[in-house]
Amino acid sequence: MNVRRRHISAVALTAVAALGFGTLTACSSDSAAAGDTGSFDVVASFYPMAFLAERIGGEHVHVTSLTQPGQEPHDLEISARQTAQLEEADAALYLKGLQPSVDEAIGQSPIATKIDAAELTTLEEHGTEAGHDEEHGDEHGTEAGHDDEHAHEDEHGHDHEGGDPHIWLDPVRYAEVAEGVGKAFQKADPDHAADYRKNTAALVEDLKTLDEKFRTGLANRTTDVFVTTHAAFGYLAERYGLAEEAISGLDPDTEPSGARVKELQKIAKEDGVTTVFYETLVSDRTAKTLAGDTGLRTDVLDPVEGITDHSRGEDYFQVMEANLTALRTALGAR
Image 1: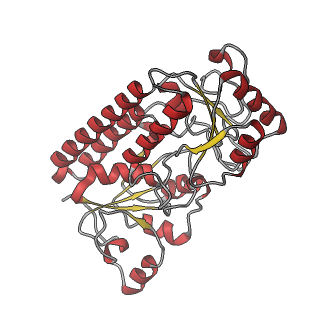
Image 2: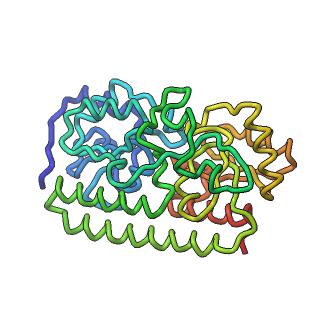
């Protein structure tokens, strides 16, 4: 197998074991977390990348996620020990533009196989605080032409210059990324290329099925507009003809302006909005305040940035189907 291996000391093993990485089910022991696994070792930046690596790699990979379950991935800061762990990996799978500290650490690491998911599909700009009038196509934030001062970099310094990074929430784009990851695994570990090819094809087929569920499930609805705390669903909205109105920007910690809150109240009334969506990894305070002021209900629309005990499912597909159920209810789909 074309996988590089290094022998590390007992002291190094102890240090690495203390890192507290979130390790997925492809890992079978504590020693595996140290990088001496006998498998193709993949370090993934956060859950959607780790999920791809595990599904495509199957039994041949050991997958380690840099982002702990329950940790907001936008806020991740790579430690010196995590940087050292990266150097022991065979491949790194990440999404450039989402986690600046990860981008920097991987860029400076000697890893031979660096897979940037942002290069495996097309990225677009999605607005942050959209305007509103009777013609949604001109004003809603899901349109690529929307001009917003926060579209490239938010006030917390997260760089989104390459476009909206939330590509995994569109099953079609996520499938494109999966195909690219599969090819990268085949090249880096040719001894298991046939299995990687087979696993990739199965995953892509599952994503096609998910896409069809969203298309049919949202076909007959009473409104196109949904309100979220975090502008994570631009690609999903674009794929299925919806209009996302976000309270905050691409960064879930951004506080909305008073004018934006008033605008959202107007939008909710004019477009028959019933629900303000919040997510599992950030505070629901703003969503509940807006909902209370407008007489709306609240519900979860999960950006699937991590799986926790509070998630409505145990993996990407289960949570996305829960999202579909929530959207159908909110949009009056029949």
